[in-house]
Length: 188
Image (cartoon, rainbow, N blue to C red; front, top):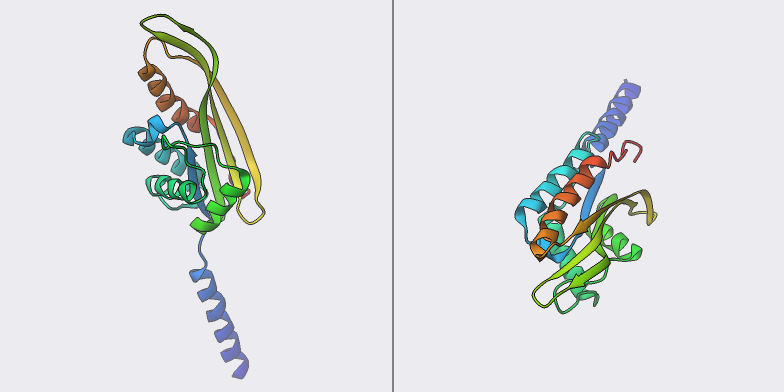
């Protein structure tokens, strides 16, 4: 009789531990051009694409991308990484790990997107710049501080005669990179 009670208690303890254990969590840090951080449609599209990548493997994406953008901005401000125009340098590996710890997540999905100027041409009334749009997609194990997945996408762009053309290009390029990434997060 005592054996049955002990086994029952052990069984209940193991069951309750499994029920209380949280699933694997991932936070998203979007180091994207300032011109897109206030573009709700692009932010929502990035968020939806990220959730598709991780949802099928039962990851919990937390916090949502809009909240993460605000918290990352605050982290930059607190650590002297924020430029006067509101932008800033890209986060270093240690910063990404610190943010993952702050978010209390197992992994960080770090999206870096930026233009890299190739050549430009200017006249009295307009300027035209050809650039490479670069999108780095990286997944970091917060506990070890190592990037376990890294992919890069590059695409040539041209501002034409307006800056708006670059904004439009990036608003399509980042979600397309996420769609085409085919990141295998199943082993995480």
